[in-house]
Image (cartoon, rainbow, N blue to C red; front, side):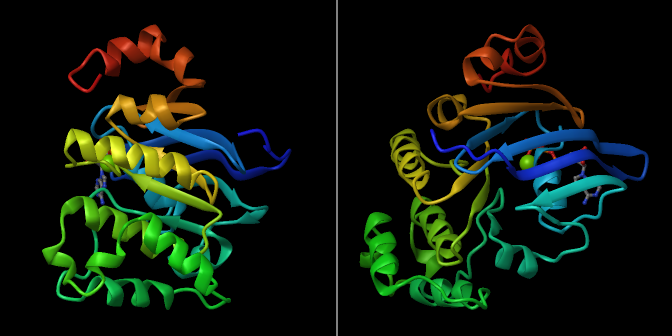
Length: 243
Ligand SMILES: Nc1ncnc2c1ncn2[C@@H]1O[C@H](COP(=O)(O)OP(=O)(O)OP(=O)(O)O)[C@@H](O)[C@H]1O
Ligand SMILES: [Mg+2]
């Protein structure tokens, strides 16, 4: 996008996370700007979800700094981070299956203390995600694709400045992946996006920049075309079945 601001929206310095003897993240340095869509790729177990988990307060880092919108994120819980404008989804769908789609959206809205969406914005998102026809169904009775769109709606009501998506097309059929890519392209107009994916089509079509993690280390950071031709990235990741 063209309106990159000079100050980073997200700034991570020397971030280190250890589980016992395992360094899940080792001295990660990283910045992203408002308006950017950033892709994160890497083999299974390379630390991608852990990165989001540390940033959103689930894990405490051993070392390092992390700032969102000029404020330290250290010690903040997910409610405080939501208030600051940081939202995330999880690798596996997390909705309240025994509650209706509408109720799931209502519950998500409660997380925000400040003013939520206007009626116009709310209705716009609902129509855009094509969720209106399923509002009264139980969330467990809608398709996985609809559940993933419901999760987007549950974050959009929180008015995120940055939305971190952990494998948003996981488990979707090829045609649904195409539809999700189109939705995420349109989502760029509403929020900055950080996206973890193994499906390279998603990264190629969406990301302005790509960061590669291997065994907890950031080994590359650059435009998609550069990353996809990086020898180490090809040898240690893209050469595998995911490419
Ligand atoms: N809560 C935890 N306790 C101990 N080890 C963990 C925990 N969460 C993750 N790990 C370990 O940290 C490493 C990084 O895991 P992580 O889930 O971040 O990988 P990932 O890159 O998201 O992988 P995938 O692509 O399979 O989702 C792995 O070795 C994993 O086993
Ligand atoms: Mg993961």
